[in-house]
Figure 1 (tube, rainbow, N blue to C red):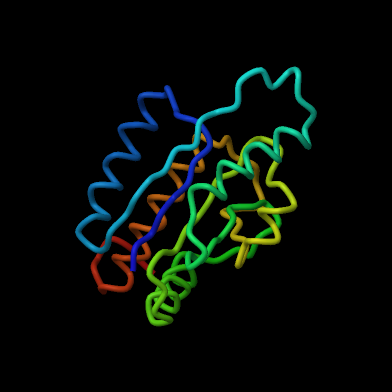
Figure 2 (cartoon, rainbow, N blue to C red):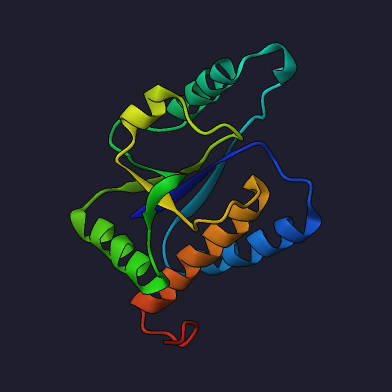
Length: 157
């Protein structure tokens, strides 16, 4: 199984780029991992929130296949502890899906089309994080899940 993370816009924050890169490289020892960056919208001041979500939704839909399992990183999603998230990843691997896609949306969430297409929602915390920080937190948690599944000492209980 491959895991794909779709991100909205690039980050300019060097510490996030470096941290993300560390975990992205580590993950490649366990499974194929890909990052897809959809371009940040331009001229958003001239667009309503709904128009922004619609445009972002169109870009997300162009980035996925009909066979992909789509999970939205959403504040109203299901929360897991790290071992529970590892179990979720294992269940997806066992199900035979080829590509598990997670999406970090824009600042206003997702369009209705994306919510309808999604197979689930995941929340990293009840707290709110910047979209930049979510990238780093999420990739670390995927790496942690893989080390849990391989019984490696990275995660302590």
